[in-house]
Length: 254
Image (cartoon, rainbow, N blue to C red; front, side, top):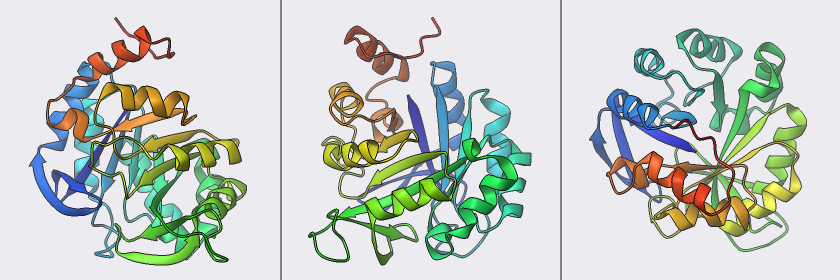
């Protein structure tokens, strides 16, 4: 069970399909709340760092790292090994590369060589499209927080990212993001079947059954939640108990 904190200007934010982003709270307080309730891992995205061409807000990362003692994965504006190293020193266990890696794929292998493949996550923002010669999988990569279409096939990019040294994929479905209608199961299943590294499903969770679906039918290795817990609809512990009661292996700490 992984919770995602999208942060804009130091505040917790949430969007629907990457638009209409609203500030909804304090990311540090939420991180502590989820940690105390049994969360397994936390993902922190500075969602405007890439589009604003600036570095991630290290101060917020440091504050979160001081409050939680579970793996912390951080992304947004990472363009070099130095950026990755700064995040590790700020308390991040894993670094997420996205837009900069699409523009310069060697960034993945450079970071993997410097801090280990297990600590390098390729985060992919993906939009469903028609199948054609340039997008044979029917899904394409969008970067800069949903602003730029690179015309890159999602399956092709996932395989390339694995080959370059990424140790994990986070599959963000733009179509499902914030809708609460469920994960994009076809996308998650396609990528999980294609790569050998762990796949984290992201975007669309609206109830506990959606998590069950993506971890079974969608064949994801982990499920990322945001709106489901940010708005107090469910607690992390409730979601984990539901999965455990439905024979899904989860890490229970109580």
